[in-house]
Image (tube, rainbow over all chains, first blue to last red):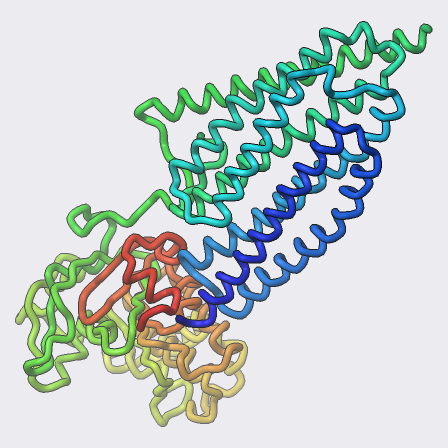
Length: 219
Length: 308
């Protein structure tokens, strides 16, 4: 085995660790939201630094591999996948942080997401989507599995987000005094929907890694 | 109170915009999905096109049909069928001893100089089998020029090196020869460096300049095809870069077939790439495809350095 495959293997281990950290980030966020815990949300904000550091380290390693080995074919696709997924994972973590920052508003206005059962539906779908997506990073999943994640986002997560927004909209009359809280509720919903989109992006990149086909905008 | 009502209106508008965005996104997804299901949809991604199989001829200048070559009892090229397109750069890659240089040298019958060689199958150049007994070898080699691994200028002046071929073909007029030498040196991106010293010995030039002089010399007989057998293997990165730029510029006028061990070079300059192994053609496709999604696992293993 030459050096490049070994280094790609190590790169993917780092990527897998970053993915698991991001998954933990999301579940911590949801725990903080359900619990209405300000201290938990602040922990999420501070933990983001470590994820940013990992992102830079992985990107540096990808650039190093491209420069030193000029990879081709499967190796090239794997490194391209790592670069893109790394970026998407960092953006997922950023969405968690922006939601954590919105928590303060909800706590100040004493409004809980528990009032909106559809939030839970949306959150569960996104958590599941991220969990499935991470399997694409850690295991050699087939194309069909990746496509199912993409379709799930388009059909299920987007619909859950729309339903959640409508449920807030239906109760908008009661929130005259809590404009900021409504803004926070919708922003958190939007962040979850974006996380679903990013999972779908990762799945698209997984299809590219396996088949060389760019399926973006075509599924 | 008024302020709160205004804020409420803003939120309502934002909700409606957001809902509209989702609806629009869902409609787009549906449209894309519907389009994908229609039979005439074109998969427009960079790796979807592959080179057609040899039977589907299009604009090819050289066509090998079940071509094999033996050196005595040893088979060097085994049943190759491929088409080389006009005006394109075709790279041949593969491990040492896989028959790529042997195949290249068959195209203008340079292997005739090696005793006990024999061939089977056909190697067509512009609808004529190059191994046809009636073929005029001088004319064939005029139309299919060759550049070798090591620069091999004649021990003559720069001018005489380029004028050698035209003179051999009967051109004696000094003005005409001057024109040919200038044009060819310009085409080989060497004119600016040597125009003041055309009467200097070609052996005094640097390695990269000598190789470009050899290219100019090959161009002087106005060939249709240029065969290049590892033309940069003896050159430094700067000279290699110049030759690569030259190859890309020359493909507008000439068909180029290049054998190279440098895979990055093949990826940079060629339009199509053929991978040879143990005398056989394993895969022949667009360079983009070969270096990103090769179809054959052997090609993948070779270009990723896992074998060869």
